[in-house]
Length: 103
Image (cartoon, rainbow, N blue to C red; front, side, top):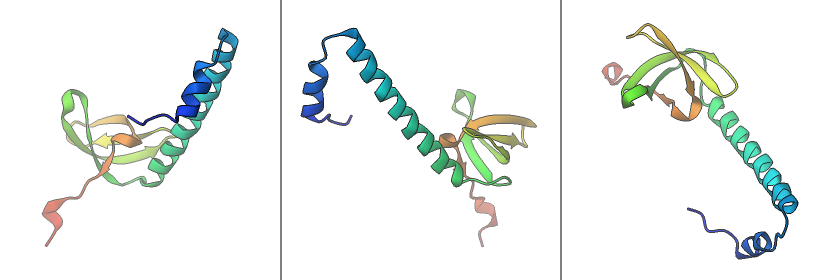
């Protein structure tokens, strides 16, 4: 866990009303959303429709599939083994390197 700046901790401890706490919470939440959205955009840039990917499905099983659509926060992945489409967050996707194709 990241250690917080002591000055920031002191400022937070000086809050005395619910309104002040609410204003700080809204500011922190807005910043958190900005950081999350930037992270998703950067992760999305690493993938293209047609990419072969691997991800962990339910019960922690590894599944391989092909990206069929890029949505704002998740990719639609078609898994050929099960003939199902999954909506997978970009953070859970890894490019699939088929080791059988290497010389």
